[in-house]
Image 1 (cartoon, rainbow, N blue to C red):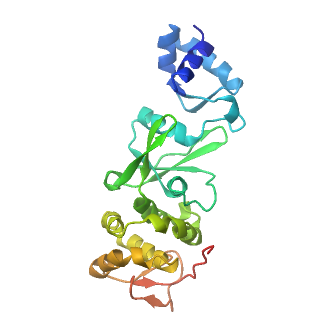
Image 2 (image 1 turned 45 degrees about the horizontal axis):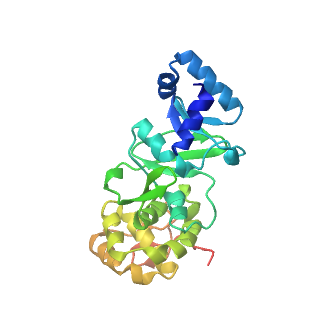
Image 3 (image 1 turned 30 degrees about the vertical axis):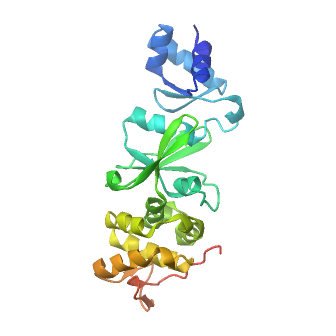
Length: 260
């Protein structure tokens, strides 16, 4: 058996990834021989290596990108790295059918900061959330198994909590127009309880702004009972003379312009 036979056997079984150690064992070859064989297939565009030792099989239809779609290998990559994760932010919004524009970067929530990973033209971006284990997630079927994805409610509050990773509040508001239709009011409170209070205040305001007020009544009650002070809508902007929104205890220091 050579590496081409090995890869063909994997794909026939529906698998599109392998480690160098697995290749060495299958071919009965040395580490150097395995590296050389992998390198030759990489040069042909048939393999990609997002991290050392983890190889992704790239079929002809994806060779212009140089990698499989992220959803088809990220779960296996996270298992290889031993990382708890969930697909979040704009990438989760897209999976929930609420992406205004196709994200250029695939976003993954992890417990600690990590550097971006490139796979061909694809970039994986890691965003840290310390209490990742408390965030509600769902399992999403993929062509290679299943992926862990933020629920619509987790996605919504993370979009507000990480605006610089989400295209800014104007873009977040635009996404919430579609995402808001599938949000559950009680579940919004659940994610608010494991998130900073200002995130809940800003999310409630934006949902009201895009016409989803029926989804925010329970969240408004939670904010009224637990928010201690007014906070700015945009934390890095001037707040002097900003009008107050008493429902969400927000200082409205920026005019939101969603693509309504």
